[in-house]
Figure 1 (cartoon, helix red, strand yellow):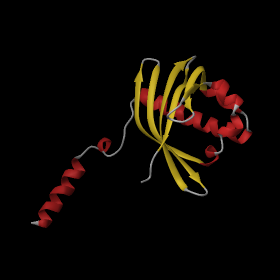
Figure 2 (cartoon, rainbow, N blue to C red; figure 1 turned 135 degrees about the horizontal axis):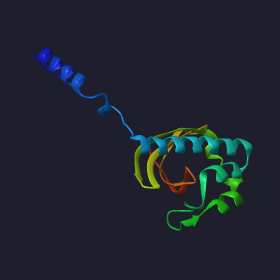
Figure 3 (cartoon, rainbow, N blue to C red; figure 1 turned 135 degrees about the vertical axis):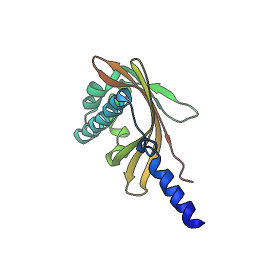
Figure 4 (cartoon, rainbow, N blue to C red; figure 1 turned 60 degrees about the horizontal axis):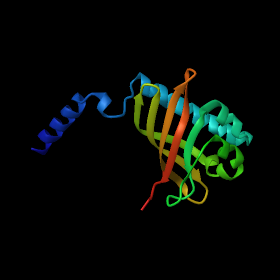
Length: 155
């Protein structure tokens, strides 16, 4: 009986389309994901060059906003905050490893992407933050319009 059940499960799993085993993105979603990945690489280049402009000029809308401060007293800030406070903001990003997309939703010229960002820290190993970023398509490219990050509690 066990052999028959195992054979049945194996047969059924072979009949399930490959697309159900992993995420598949349509062309619009893939375009956004590619832009986000390219901008994360641009961010890392800005960190290496110690120059916020590398990122703000190439990947961020001038009217972009993001949360800074604590959850009890958040402040909405934009690219100018990034330029002013560059040195204090980039420490964790020196260990950026990768991102894992969860959802990419595209509505005309606006895209919302939920994902996990992964960082390698000397004292903690790999840590992850859940991020939500809003991207806007302007001048033929996707630029970051808003963002928020929350640390993932590892229990």
